[in-house]
Image (cartoon, rainbow, N blue to C red):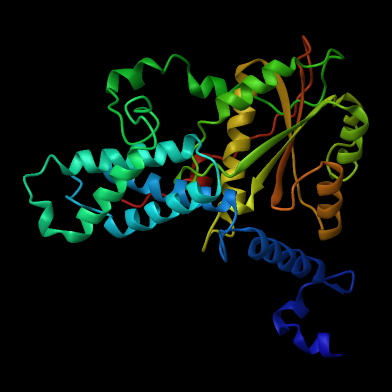
Length: 338
């Protein structure tokens, strides 16, 4: 009776087979619990969360430096927090490429501000910041790692020269394929595709995703038994990729970002595989709480990982049937706001 009184009146209208849609509420609460527990929202007192904060903050400086006319001494409060976090990280963990990138970016920030004929002594906060950055630079040979962080110049010709394919034709040539040859997919090609996909855009360059690759047929079948959408061709799937999002790389107001970034990476991976002549089929990851826990156990996922998408992978047959999958018209999708 208490539970019934707690249910908002509008939910009582949404009944299927006489049952309230409580499982949907349960799923939402479960994902909220996961986000609050494993994201960097409430604390970042571990290596991954601290590193995610550092990447977010130093990338903000990179973005600032890439603007048309950055103002002198911009973002001082942000850099101050970044330096403190770098010092915390170095005190507790090892130096790595991301820390080097952050330090290089900070050094380029100082170099940028030297271009202005402004007496920095009039800005005591900047004086302290620049001194702290100098101390950090002593830890690494920033000239050796110049391409790790900051900005670079790119010519229009460089971008145009990379347009060597007809992307419309490339995209239209890809279909979800559910029938593969019996030959195993070259695992090195899978690794190659993942490597290509690392250039996927992500929020503040945090790259909160992972690609789990499975080739053990027994494990694949156990995973696929929990996925609703592979009946009729499960026996053909000898290589499976499970893309996940990592909650511990996200902060406040980013509860849905794990799905956005993970979905973008999955799309890049699908196109990367297609570019290598490998057939794929996207498999949804719409799980109940119980199924989510089972998938995590069978697929050997970490507690902070969220399943985003499964991708079945196989070698192309000479000829195969595919669904036409008619697309919506541009009028159905595009809303122009002049």
